[in-house]
Length: 88
Image 1: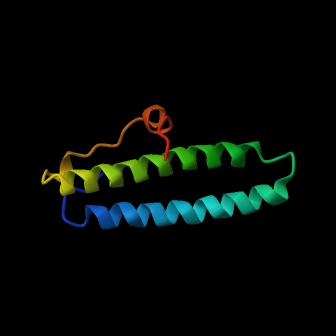
Image 2: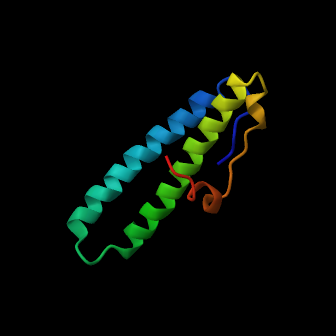
């Protein structure tokens, strides 16, 4: 995911999250009707969940940097393998 470097970066990230949440819901609904078939949709859902976690992590990084008085533009998208290991 490209990160905008202007003042609207947080809004862009939140917009992307909103779209991905809608896509996730649509995929889950599709999978509920797919039965044992739907391997492609399950793979897409897994990839979407990972990207969504990365977006939430990026947003948290930006907010933490802002609260610390630092430049939120220093936040970076971290690898899925890093983000997936976090606990809420």
